[in-house]
Image 1 (cartoon, rainbow, N blue to C red):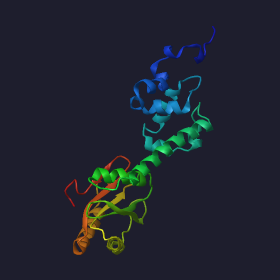
Image 2 (cartoon, rainbow, N blue to C red; image 1 turned 180 degrees about the vertical axis):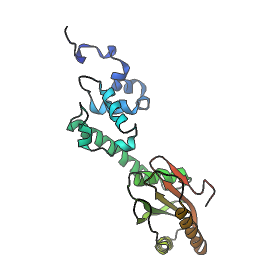
Image 3 (cartoon, one colour; image 1 turned 120 degrees about the vertical axis):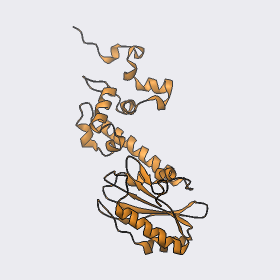
Length: 233
């Protein structure tokens, strides 16, 4: 029996799942699934599966988590049949551009109006770290960012904070308020006893200097915890 190639069929005869480019043109980019977007990047699948099916298999290997997909390197991706070096590089490049876009977007968001706004700025910085980092966002009286800085870097389970340095920077900037942020590599959103203690200590020190601690966020890949939103600040 003669074996027909994909080219033997009109695009209009293809299943919609096999033609994500046409779907994007007709319905817009928001209508496409993650697998369909990746399928456009890789262009074609292999003898046994379409580009979309191959993309779905790649996503399944990382629990359909784009944040995990970002961590795959060229060698990891080339283990999938149908993915060569060029296709792997295309996927990695697109994901890196997306991450950089988020970082640039964060830089042009000067005013902090909510915990969600803080999360939007800080997650791209903290989400992929395997160790804890403690950051401080310094604000003026309009809640506009004067500076954001990593105050300390630690291990997997904690980091040491120099409170004197924290407020030295605040005084130099004539900051009116500060927002504390740190990540949990474990992805646990609940604050530890140490998190509660250091937040209280910084808040009390700030009260003496008339510098208000507006919030403390715990940042993870899956979301965030806000001390202010939870009423424990």
